[in-house]
Length: 186
Image (cartoon, rainbow, N blue to C red; front, side, top):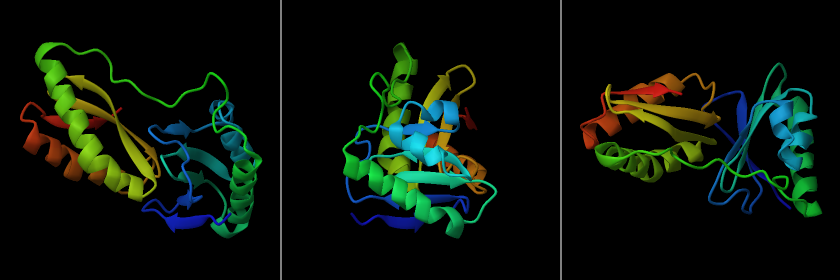
């Protein structure tokens, strides 16, 4: 098994590409040892000193480090990923599931939310997935025109995440969905 790595805009996050599906059609974000218990691979990665976050995308794993250098932990991360995929173990424990769902909206709000999610899925998420991250819809306040988004993977804690959110995504959503007045992190 050959695992490629790619840098991301967040210097504390590397993207690992195992050359096969990781979590097709979903994603999962683990920011603590406790959360990682929902995944044998995430648990294994959190046992490596310096690993502070693990994110599973459709075909990649983004690992965030803290307090160490990549050259010290990258070999252990590659080994853990390789061991996991060659063992045939499940990615998520039984009963755990990728995050999904967008809440219940009715009438005009439902139409606006549908437009927002379509734009995120077709224009935003593919671009940020290339950088090892994801941006997910968390809510819509129709009264204020505010969209709430969750930045995950390499996007969480990235130095340029605020600019991406405000200058890029907010401008895009305002252009295509006139009801949008602001975009805020969830």
